[in-house]
Image 1 (cartoon, rainbow, N blue to C red):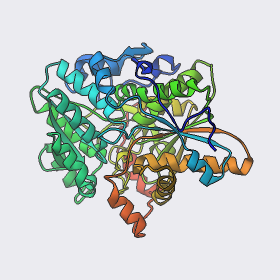
Image 2: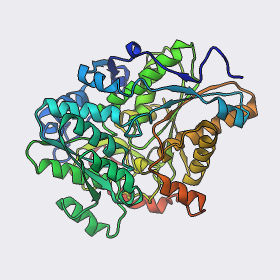
Image 3: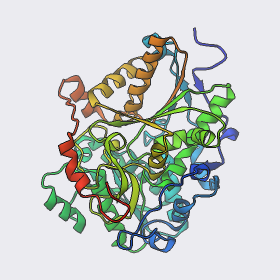
Length: 461
């Protein structure tokens, strides 16, 4: 029988919800390198960035000093519709694995968008509305971010234009229709509309697209329209900041029952959900108060941390965005049509890249057939159909739990279940029909992307 003192689901009371986001940069000895203007190679200023992003979001992007930033009351009001989200003890999975490990997962799929993305979408839409803008443009991979942003924009009466990675646009038509239900205009990327889209299609004819391509188109579309700004669902420090609501709730729920995790695991594409989950715990490590293992899990087909270069690179394929110092496969890298569309990004958050470079995190890449095996195993015993992205974390959580079985260690494992997979049934179908293939790029495959990384003094590969 389960331990009576710890329930299956640990909920915080509404009055226990965090009222501030946590800015881990304040506790980092080595701050993330600043965004650079690709023309001058100097740090981007507030005035330069405000032409692309909302003013308040630029302030958050540039803030390396304030540890806590107040969450506006209207955002808190929206959060209360689906937060606090539950921290779940995976008793059934533990029993199935016959492991002495204790496994917990923070479930972020308990809202209509189906993922954690709504945490930042509502914040970015709020600041756009406060600034008096007409609308926003964005990109989306698997569609969770586009869905969340379309919901947030509908809530505040903003126009929403989404450039959806073409392979996901075709694989996930129902996700596309949810966006349209909330009033968004959805365009498969790359497209013929923005100039940068036409350029990408000329250079990569027949491409299935990537998040880097879609970012380029969305930025150009925003700059071409008065009263519009571009918003991003991951990678940037401002997005990671908003997602710390996940980690703050997780830590509060664990503290409520005096639970101390040994290992904290999250899937990693651009880095916002992983960063949001681990930030409050990482802060304790940075301040010398605690010690945890952090594991970032990425697809073997797009291994930015495990095989990328830590250099300045463009955030987008069309090279219209600033340069960010991050682990990158090169902005020209077009990953294979992996079913975890939200992880198909060539780079990684500058915050996580710096932490990884400084040795505070581990990284692991996994193949998608192994990921879907873990997803199916989890679904059959825990009753939730996980998103392919989230299932990367499930795969490694299971692997770590099985190691505990071998050694007899009673470790406590926490992972982020970032969303549900009910719009990913084409992927599950291919897995069940034996049509899913693993792809691991060779060193030769990675060379073209690395060759496109900008060269300048101090940015040698």
